[in-house]
Image (cartoon, rainbow, N blue to C red):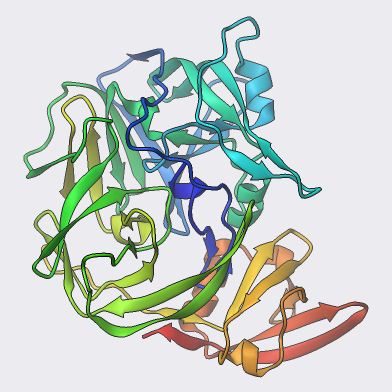
Length: 396
């Protein structure tokens, strides 16, 4: 799985929590939804923007509302045990699903179990016999500050026109074959219904996954490209995963990225050794429509000027977040936190004198974007200490 299941989940620049290990394959038939039906020509759904993700809130029974994230980079759908218990078909033959290994609290590696849901309703769009994997979304809920009931993978929308309208904070669903506003279509670069498209970096072409479940701007595999960098790549935050930790390498490119007819000059990138991907950090400037029936998609934007991406600011800390404290999982060498002697394993209980439970994603992002420094209350063993850390340019 990619997207939310394969890359960092952030609270602002330095707070990271990767939730699942990658398992997407380009030559495996994706799980197919059963039936998709519409009670109206289109379903218009408001979406809350949190940390470069569109979060849907829908209600179709007395137990809702439910909150879902749409992950176009995932070939599976995840739902909580509660939703699986409520809508899982008890006597159904379970679907053949990709194996997704996760690390449990006791350190053992287990695979997520499959289920078949009788329904998922998104406004006037109803999906029946939905294959899914059962996953406790508590970590997502804790990171985003919004109760998450599931992550909807790309195959769920195979029989729809799916529009993620980031600027207007909404999702639009229409039956396949509905008319699309005039725009230049970009073809998927494969027959497996995965949104892989050609994009240009300077005068070179590469294939990138359009991944709404990734909060990065551009995750770039530089193999064969020899990209120019205006800055870096340098060591970035530590990414915590359910199967281990890794350290990011981040920088700013010296070339312009072209997505369709739109230019993104000198994008900030995470350098990876996997499939290149465009995430919510760029997608949030667009309305993006996916047409799986015809293997194509559209980017639309009201403004015609190039997309200017800001740098990344950080104290140098990476966190794993719980309601009571944020555990430090990484410290960037040479950063303000590193120079202050902060170490992995330390706990943060308060920021600027307020308990971390009061710091949601948006508020922490604003602090990192605008403040010159922040006061962190650290708990090491039974000792508390407050340290003022400067907020520095991780990537100018």
